[in-house]
Amino acid sequence: GDSRSPNRAMLRAVGFSDADFGKPIVGISNAHSNITPCNAGIGELAERAALGLHAAGAMPQTFGTITISDGISMGTEGMKCSLVSREVIADSIETVCRGQSMDGLVAIGGCDKNMPGAMIAIARLNIPSIFVYGGTIKAGRWGGQDLTVVSVFEAVGACAAGRMSRTDFEGIERNACPGAGSCGGMYTANTMSSAIEAMGMSLPMTSTMAAEDQEKADSTEAAGRQLVELIKREILPRQIMTRTAFENAIAVVMALGGSTNAVLHLLAIAHAAQVELTIDDFERIRRKVPVICDLKPSGRYVATDLRRVGGVPLVMKMLLQAGLIDGSCPTVTGKTIAENLADVSPV
Image (cartoon, rainbow, N blue to C red; front, side, top):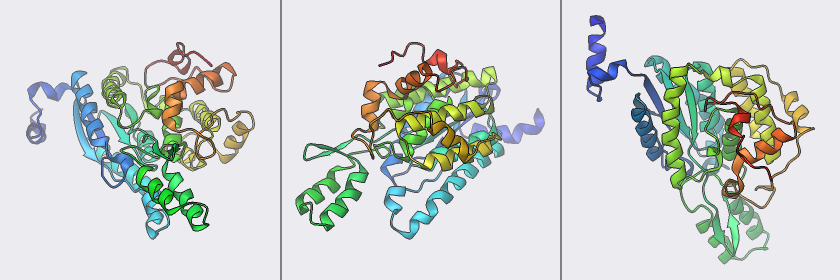
């Protein structure tokens, strides 16, 4: 109506035309920064999400969120800010989406606290939403071995103890992190991206894609298009983020040998979604779900290796066939877990 003419006038200044005011307005939470390689490629992903939203008939509006790099702040006073950043991220996303009356949300995150922060906001807002992982880093190489950032931490001790040459020590530092993406093993970032996929809040297969690979950008554009379908069908996060969905996520974390930080973050997300979940649920599920993946830091392989053999969908298919996850849970694809996994061939 006429009373909203000033509001529309301001939106015209950022690209809205007459026809756009009848379209859903979707926020793109963009955690891009060059503070950490985890988030260095997210700006381009936000642009691809916007393309997908435009193509599907929505009006995207991009806004920024913060990040703290656990890997860089570790061992310093800055590490005290890490968990705090999760709450700041959640609050910032919720504040913008409520303040601007967003019809939907595509949240893109990379470093450890980006993911639970975004998911807490998604749970609180309960508007149609999809989480997009910024992607894992590719493995570095030195001396014929795959490297991750933890390789450097280990090298510090080995060099100090006289078990590693200075040449190897410096070679590992210079080659461990070859480009954009989150820490390559099944550390907190890849653990949480896998848990979110298992929960049904991101598109299948996307949790182990490399940040620099074309499929990551393509899948982000697809997420933008799918978000519009969620708006049309009025599929809300809390319809997906049920107690059973959290139990599925915990089972996948256990099978992957994932980070213990998943306990901390999944409990917080469940609280935001008003789902009853306790630390005892993790122990109950742990007792029946075996570790079936040989992933760093305890194993030999990195997330991109898991992607090559079938990713989280393969793990979920194995767990589904063993009766260890519930295939009836809905997902952001509009299909159930079992329907998403129908064409996945088990090992």
